[in-house]
Length: 227
Image (cartoon, rainbow, N blue to C red; front, side, top):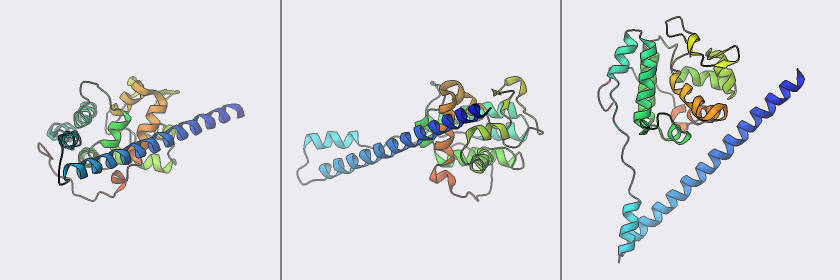
């Protein structure tokens, strides 16, 4: 059995290295884009602006704001204890926020750029209507307590049964579901699209985001379009 433990350790090490390299590359690309935007701004505001500078300035315009989402449907489902439908609605809302509705799944870049306010709003609803038992924050706590081991998150949230992840027949959409068990549809879509390496990277990107790590002490309230 020792060789199995060695292989598992090597696999986890590779996931960690790939994740670190990816995030370092993303950070470098962001710095390059910021430098380009500043350079374009200097050209556009020079005393003798040129046509080329104006064209570059238009290319450097900020991206359009994220689409507004209506959370009233999610709140209604959660308040009625309809967790399976609420799980699907959560995935739909995240896809809409990321502009990935047609694609049908979230890529690593999406997790990095998802609106913090939208994430917090969705998470607060899950926590409010489950007495703090469900939500991304609960899953993040599992992740931290396991030192970033995604497999431990799956085991603790009981997404794994007999070595099989997200077995539909064993999904629990009741009040007796294990802590952190929901929402899970979004993680199912990640695993089916990118495999275990993709799942590990997406969890890393979300749960290690600095803005997501800030403590959220706001009081839950009813949400309307654009919240």
